[in-house]
Each structure stands twice: as structure tokens, then as C-alpha cells.
Length: 357
Ligand code: IPM
Ligand code: MG
Image (cartoon, rainbow, N blue to C red; front, top):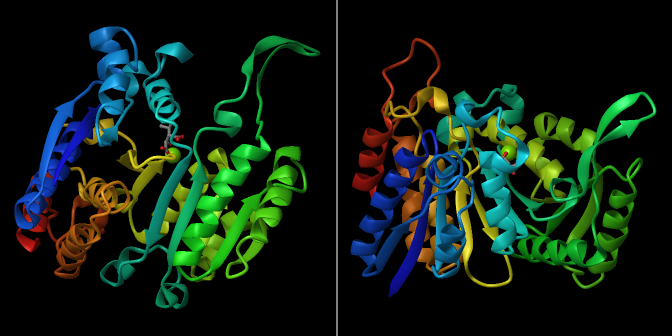
């Protein structure tokens, strides 16, 4: 089969890690007889520099015309002081909205070979964990009304969180379907003891639960969830939560896998086109030095094959290669404790994964 893939390399380490994932896709294409045609588009800081906007219209149109999108990362100190409309992150939020990608899947599991990298206590590590965070991606406080105004005590700023029943229902169904295919346990995370949006969220989750008798739904407050993730991560199977809580909890989940450099993500809407990106940022401090860990982006490419193209054997092949490379002891710098053996760079780690494919 032939597939068209839009590449958004972005800023910082983005170009290096996307190049790694493209090499992996090409290798898998050769092995299984698929052709991937890539076109590159600008977004983020590089787009601000080249076109004066973080999300050029050409990028939106190019993504809409492609079967799927692979993204590196955006942002960096160069644009940190820019006004809101000219921030690299505005491009990322804009493309998620423009493509209607309301679901963000962020799997996090402990590789047995990386148990020494997990910062948790040995008895917790021993139980392992394998969870999937389903994060709502185009609503909530990220997209609510915001601004500055004169308040009671002088100038103030505000951001608002709003969720419609429709937005909660559609992410609920995605999460229940995911739980049905996994171990049938779904934890919905909210702050229903304080927030009205969370109370509507909880009500709606329970109403939709009636359609899924095979899934056991429970609720957890977000503060408790942050604690439970480090106290006993093995209790979780599928987690469903709002845009901002999902952003925060997925970074926490990445740390207990050993490194944020390992976690892929898939952003999906109603069709098969998705946007696949590592959950980590553009790491400007190590950009261009061949030090980045390409695994999160390579695993994001595997998610693309699985979710957008229904190529599960091909996705398994990439994930298996990553498993074997980690099991063989090869490590990038983010996965090595001080004083241990010399780490592999981005290119050498990619070479090792290609060899394992
Ligand atoms: C993420 C990132 C983004 C988000 C930022 C860069 C806007 O942290 O994908 O987790 O908050 O969604
Ligand atoms: Mg984040």
C-alpha cells in the first residue's frame, strides 16, 4: 500500500528525532512492501521565523491532504517572550484543533529492562505497570476564554474551563472502547469536589458507562491520582481525563517509565488521519548535538501504523525492535545513570533499532 505522511519537524531536537522515525518507517516499508511518501511542513518557532506565524495555512492544508502527520516538537527560548499569538505552542494547539483531534492517547509502561531507571521503590517496580492515558485534547481550559481585565485588586488575568456534554461523551466512548480492548478497567480523573466542569464530566462518564457493562468505571480526584501514580501505578489500566489534567499526569507517568524520552502519543479525531508526536518537548539545550532519544518518536510512528493505517504487524515489528534494543542494554543519555557506560547518540540508537527490525 502507498501512504502519504506530512512531516512537521519543528524546533530544537525535532528535526533529529523525526529523521530517525522516517528512517524506521522506510525500513518497515521495505520489509512489508509499503511506500511512504513524505512532505515537510513548517510549524512552531521555525514557522514564526520563516512565515511570521506559528501555523501557516500551507501546513494545515498539507496535513489535511495527507493520510497522517508525524510531528517532532515545537518551542524554544528564542520565542519564549513572544506575545500569545506568536508563540510556537499556538501552532501545536492550532493544528490539533484544525484537524479535529479531540483524543490523545498516551501509553506508559515499564520495560523490564529499564526497571533500574524507574525512580520508584523496588517493591512497586516489581509489580510493573502498563497504562493508557486518554486525554481530551481540543477542549477545556486550553481552549476557553482568556484575557486580562481590571479586577477588584487591580489588573488580573483569567482562563476559563468549559466542557460540553458532547465533548465529554465522545472522549468517554473512546476511553470505554480502549478499556474494552485492554483489561476492562477505566478510571476517570477529575476534580468534582471543586469544579462544575468536573461534576458534568463525572455525571456524563457514568451515563455512558451504562453502554459498556464489560468495563468497570471508577472515579478518582486528580490530586489523589497524582499520588496513586507513584504509590501504586499497577492499579491503572485506562485513565480518561481532561486536557490539562492529562497534560500534567502524562508527564508524571513518563517519569516512572524511566525517561520522558520514551513516551509516544497519538492524537485522533473521527477519521483515520492522526497526528503522532512524542510527549516530550523540543529540548533546546541538546538540539543539534545528536544526543536526543529518538525512541518516543519512533514509537509514535508505530502508533501511526497501528491507529491510522491498521498495520498492526508492522507496528508490532517496530515495538519489538525497541524492546530488544533496550533489553540488550543499549541506552541514550537520558536513560543512563551518572558514571555508567557511554550513551548512544540519536543516530546510533536509530541504527541499533533499524538493525533489530
Ligand atoms: C504536550 C505539551 C503541549 C500541551 C504544550 C507544548 C502546548 O505539553 O503535548 O503535552 O500542553 O499539550
Ligand atoms: Mg505536556
